[in-house]
Length: 76
Image (cartoon, rainbow, N blue to C red; front, top):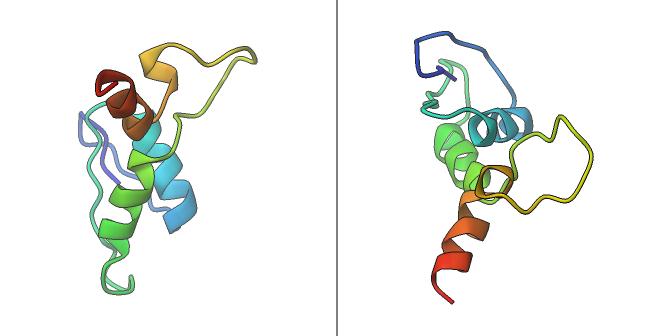
């Protein structure tokens, strides 16, 4: 995973998806030993994953929802 300024972190698919969903402008790349399709799995999972919530409370702002939830709001 690389953030918008090139900082990187290795992650499993589960945590990589949460990280990708939480960072604006992040990109996912497979590790050399990763299973085939792992980066695509992370990217796909991130679209349906809400960004990490640092503060408790209702999640109603677009920045607090997943990409899929935001798309659904705009297609109604």
